Image (cartoon, rainbow, N blue to C red; front, side, top):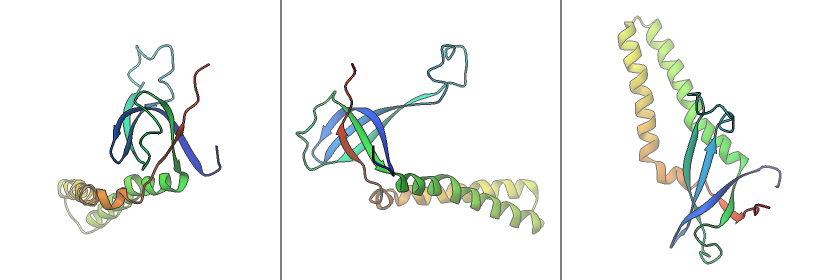
Length: 143
């Protein structure tokens, strides 16, 4: 794999006129543990990635593929979902605490500010989504 590219193995779950929908199973580090049935910390999630492609005859439903994206896009996502909300949270918290607001008002205001931020992200999801693109390649076959 090329440097600066992140790839995830998946399976083509649907073919649309604009591309493919690929199902990726995301596992936490303990998902492969033999005791995961007894532990509540194990986590597995099935994610659907939409990959735009002009040539939809290249793969068929059920094909194993690798979905690739640039590392920089991952960092952009981390900033949007984790770093900026953390800055908003700390800024509002410190400002309201030092302005003499009650703890209840501070807590509710901080939660409200974060909710507004994520609502704005939701409103602009299509515009933001244009900055995130994925490519698809044949996956490795099981031996």
